[in-house]
Length: 175
Image (cartoon, rainbow, N blue to C red; front, side, top):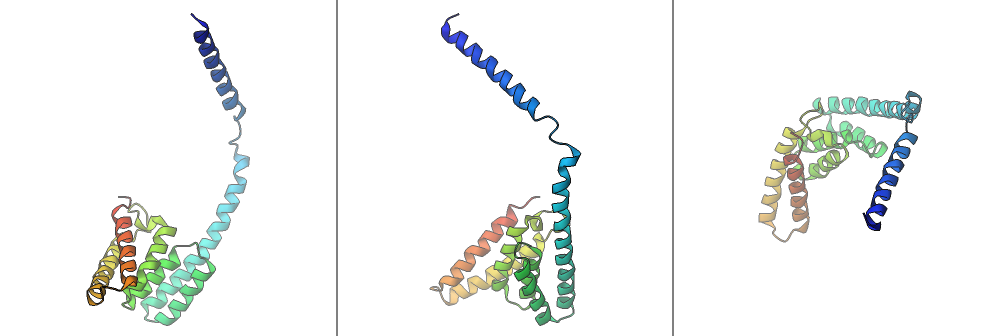
């Protein structure tokens, strides 16, 4: 055994001892008392989420009853108040689809899916993939029609990119 072998053995021994010391030093950190901060933050989010869900239900009821203007005002207020919630964006997309504005609905659906990917997860109660697939197909038909009418329109090409992005997200969703 030469010097290089002895050095290698000592380095391995030191690494093993160091790993035991580091793992032993972190024992007991996962105590029930340490989770109180996480639980309170989750409780606060649940309250905010409940408020959003209640207002979303009201907006959906207004939309179903045909009062699209009031529903749109309520949803715009929700989007302004809770910009990081996906539900108001999803409702706004539904409103725009109801108004036959498929192209304008796509950025809202994109925002909803980006903020809450569970809309594309078949294993959750929030799954909206089939509805989104129909909406994307309708919007793509509309964009293609607009591009055929005016091939130089850059905004429609941008909208087509957005629609293809949504199609990829829908196709790559959990399943």
